[in-house]
Length: 631
Image 1 (cartoon, helix red, strand yellow):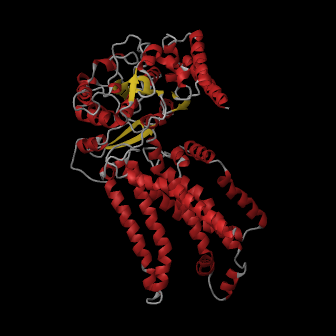
Image 2 (cartoon, helix red, strand yellow; image 1 turned 135 degrees about the horizontal axis):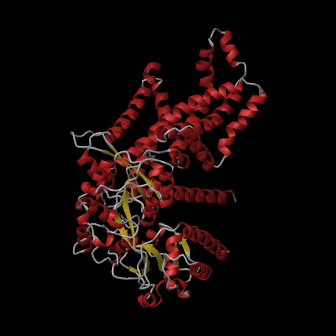
Image 3 (spheres, helix red, strand yellow; image 1 turned 120 degrees about the horizontal axis):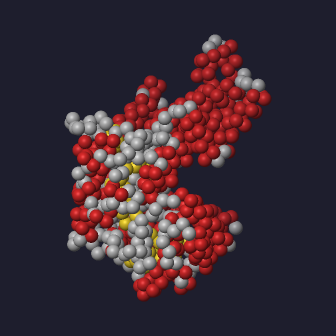
């Protein structure tokens, strides 16, 4: 019986180890993948490590993560230890109250703490960035240190300090030479927990940062649309750094114990500065990558603040622009137009925004944008006619297109008959033949576009009856078809053929088709959303002249090619678009890459606040209906 229990225990332990470490092994292996795929290994390469080292954004986030973690750990360990020792000498009622105060941030949902810090910094008008992130990390790390140190202090003889002072020690000597050595295991444990919490934190960091300051967790979050394989490389580097640190922590004491027999105390203590020096060297190497100097250039020393979608920028475009101009680009990322709007409406200053069409119309109407100086733009003649002079910005007075495309149906050719698509269009999402095998996109605009077009209506309708019919269409879909409502995870899921079909943006469909030749893209004749994202300059931009330079650079052939080839969305530059879609291009033969421009039923979204609210409320009810249908 005991033997069988031991066998079961061993098997359980092996399964747990596999569960925890297999994903890490998978990540390490794919960090050496030659291709962009996260699921298909196409050959060994150091390409993504090179990309990581070349990426100012990644190296800066690595530097930010570890510098903040080390500083926060150092300060919070000292503060937490002193606080714990002080409380041990306080009255019981004060200790009890402070214990509850200390436990509150540990038990609080992290989002509550994050919002509290954010409101605090806003109230005192403290500019968010590196300092605010550091202060927040110090604050939330201190309770963990105190929690680790307090039990060690309670286990001490309460007369220990008094005995030391009776023997001639000063209070400071009693603290440093008697109390601290006794509680050192608790201090070390607390500092390790603080360091881990700081490196790992995302939610609090996300709410208290600004000015383009990002740690690794924020950077990964902004890449959620389509994870860049170089994230595997930087994650592997982090694993290696932490592994080395753990080896030093665990092997160091054993090594020092052996050395104690052969050397004196001074030489043993000399190991500490050596380790500190090694850490400092790593910091210097990382910091050096962030501060490379260049020769005098036209915008030397200036900074351009860009607010763009996550993973929406070419592989080399930022580095190339910095090298060409001497300027520094600070890029922050958003994951929705509404998130971007809130920051702009609250007065946060950026030089370049990249919103979508309907949001540009809203920003123009609410006077948040400045008109472009076309005398400083030499890119307009290079752009396709189909992306110029669109309804949201006639004459391109405020915007220059960045990417454009359509919304259509991605489908598995082995599961979906093209005749069904041609016959039914968007109504294929009501065809019970595909029940449980479809994706709906979690976007109120795109889902209602699909429903309205399926019913033969304009996607810009403000007719209450037509909107109600579209709502009923979507409710029928979620109740009878059991769809999976997703966002950007549809990209990799369809690339792996997990469902028969789904609603998707054309640029994402191009990536899916490039990854899996069994995938197709279909645009129903009833029409679709012809969308575009464009570069605009806010009224409160601090460097509009450099912003115009950036617009020219991104719109020129090299910048536009880098952007479109890497991201996969259609370039507005006509020559780039033809080259990438033409013979030998990255997207040769991939129909999703080339937007349709000859269908009168295709439309551009028009912003209407009342309709937006109506659709938003209806979409919430659709998702509730979907949740109830799953029960």
